[in-house]
Image (cartoon, rainbow, N blue to C red; front, side, top):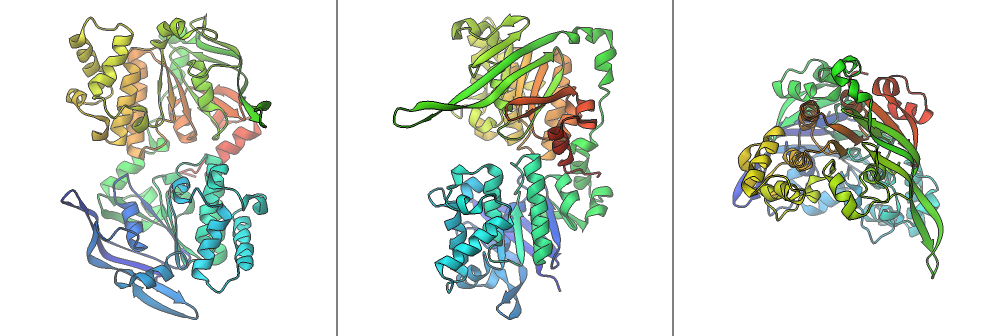
Length: 552
């Protein structure tokens, strides 16, 4: 008998007087000890389905006009099958956290910032085991932290969420979810924002705990590499419907539905390979041997101050003695874990972060030490596309103003009419419509906003662009479109790109050369085929080995 059976489930949401069919006639089952992966693009209904199962959707905006959610509720020594849609709130509270637990996508917003992490695990234990003493609950919370491999669990117990790294916070969420030994774990994109090495550790941890406790897992993700690594069965969702369900190997190797085929074709591993050798051999590209951007012994240190007088006791060496060359017309990938200094290096090259020491040159001209006024002519040559376009685009400005303002600052176009025409051409270059000029950022999808961010960088016709994690939060199909768009723009405009990312599959597809950073230092650099195909540094080897592969 299945642990969970979802039968013809419908979840309707009310939004502004309209009804959204978020989950539309979905059926699947999960056996005991099985991992069922749910994949699909943003807005497909994956998270709404998960929240429907655990009954966490607000009643005032949600309804279930049809279907059943049958769950084998283990209560003390007996087990009974219940329909989650028909249980009262008291029964649901008994099941949530104890029999069905959930790991949310963003631990920073899921953990209470004013309580210590150990206390939050204790709270989950005491809520479902009111007979436990505080001391026993503390010991069990510590044991849960140790089980998810939190180093120095006793000292970490008293940390607040902001004092932990992203990977440690995610482990605390897992410890909290597993503390009461649930029968079903729902994991909603638990590794999306994590570094590849931390992701590998979290996946390995969930798998080991699942096998030890014979727990079932509903794992929501858009990463097919993760699916290939952990899933027993796969369900593909599109616009609220489950369009394909089957054994993992069957779905990944021989998808039957056109939508599944489209998603799998968009995975970087499956995108058409580029012949990068042409960039080295054609006469037209001999100029690429010239370095457009150079750094020499570049340092960016941030002081650590302590005491009443705030004396400097040490430095955070975010960028430490970095020397690199970025050649004209090349796409150079900058990879490494969070905190390795990638973004700081990119910002230091653009002089958005003042270096502590060292040199940055573009076209042979030194930038370090120039005043804001002296840097202004160089701003036109070098631009940045930020990781999160939602926060980097001004929500109160029309796209027309967003694109024409930098042109006006740099004296591009003789009047507003000409600048608007140039802005429309830039939008078309990133495959958006001209009439999008008269919309605001909130009227676009995430992929469209990312294209607008690129358009803003391209508006002043730069030679060099830093792309900071611009595909990290995108669906696989949108990511593929943005990557192919970057390649087209690079060819059309002879651009040079520094592409900051932690996605090795993207690096292998997109970049000509790769630079690997760890703790502020460059540990390896060279042609992407060499760095990813035959890494020499142990850290690079660890990064490459941690990548979940679709075709492994």
